[in-house]
Image 1 (cartoon, rainbow, N blue to C red):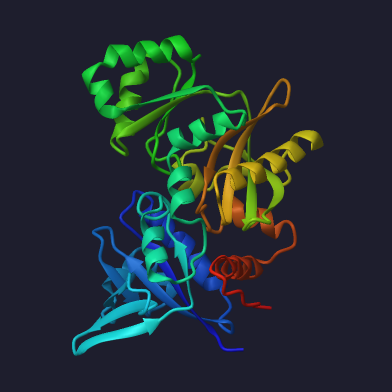
Image 2 (image 1 turned 135 degrees about the horizontal axis):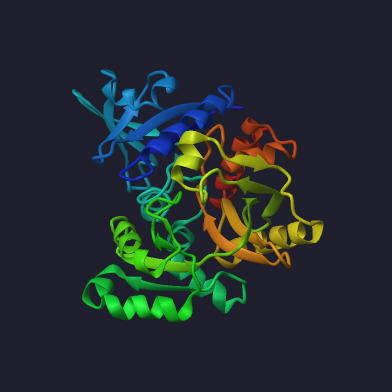
Length: 362
């Protein structure tokens, strides 16, 4: 069987640029070199696309950008090209691709932006399509849609940052009237807890709102849930399945960016320390939410299980979860018997399946 020409895209103009580099390193190191010709495409923080042919170990610290062999290369939206345009000094080369694996997180990576380019290019790609990526990225839209489907969530309200600038007292009073403290103030469109604050006192709202507004123009405020934070990995297209449930024992007051990707000090419990009935409810709800929002390929769905009565309360859905060595998504599937490499194969297969170009990689 001929090898697949697979581009792994990493970096990006995003607050999660560094996390993407770590995810891409793990992905590239675990992809089968017998099944794929791997093309590493990095996007710098200022938006330049570069074809990198060096050692994947240089990704994590950003030194890949200084490689003298780097050449500009970018996906063509012309579906007849079906690949990368690589710009050499003596002209352009077309590097035809069979599939794309985006190892991108946050804005411009999992919000539907780059998925639209993939769609125009006609190249199969791993993960959710443009529409579902955009929906899942925006916490206000996700909450609103799932409320209509009677999915239990924390009480919340959302507003535009410029409305807070214009009428701060109105926003503060609505929060005070509708939500019990502590609350979590979040940018609607940012991942991995970037810009998120736990607020225990009414007096501290302003600082948290300003912090969130630096990441996005829309802000959501959610009532705190007392309970265990658990996560479920979903894999597949319309026939998606859910993994075993894992639990986060956060070392900080909540599972923040540093805890997820830098310190690595949180304790992960697989399986989660919750009753069997609650675990099954988490798995069922994860797949239901995945289908309701039109997801495909993969997503990690996060919940709280309340301390007193073990209610399952949706937290959020992440369509391109971390793939670092300490990330929950691959760990959950590995605990169910899949190797890291087999999981990556499945994801590429689902990408080809969604595009009507199914190919068995066994």
